[in-house]
Amino acid sequence: MRVTLLLSCFIFVVLFNPGPTSQKATLCTDREKNLFSCSVKRSAKLVSLCASADVTKTRGYVQYRFGIPGKVELEYPADKARSQEKFEYHHYFRAQIDETEISFSSGGYKYSIFDDYNGEMRPAVSSQGVRVEAPGTGKESTLECQGKAKASYGDLDQILQVREN
Image (tube, rainbow, N blue to C red; front, side, top):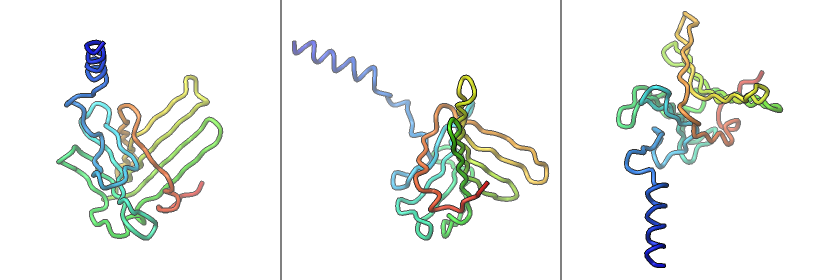
C-alpha cells in the first residue's frame, strides 16, 4: 500500500510538473500587476503590459515592455510618472463579440495591444497580441500571441483614458 502511494505521487509529479524548462511568460516583476502578457509566435520575445500594485488614475504607473527577460528592447514610457495618461483603453462587447484594445504612440509608431474574440465565426476565432503601425506609411505589423495571453483588464476603464466608439 505504501509503495503504491509513493509510486502514485511520483507519477503525478513527473506528469504534471512543468520542470525547469518552463519560464515565466511575462516581463512584469513579482511586485507588479500583470495586465497583459504573452509569448510572441515564432519568437522568444514577450509582450507585457505591467502596472504597479497600487495603480489608480492618479497613483502608480502602467508600462509596456517588449523583449526577453533580462533584455527588454522597448519599455514605454521610460518615465513612469503619470504614465496612465499615455495609454488609451477601448472595450467593445456584445453577444458573441468581445474586443479589447490598449494603445499608445512612441517615436511616431502606434502600438495596440489587442484581445479579440468573435463567436459569430465558425469555428469561433480568438486572437491576441500587439499591432505596430509605422509612421507615415500606414503599414501595420501584427505580432500574435502563441497560445492564450495572461490578461487581467479589471478596472482599466477607471485607470486609463477611454476611447469611445
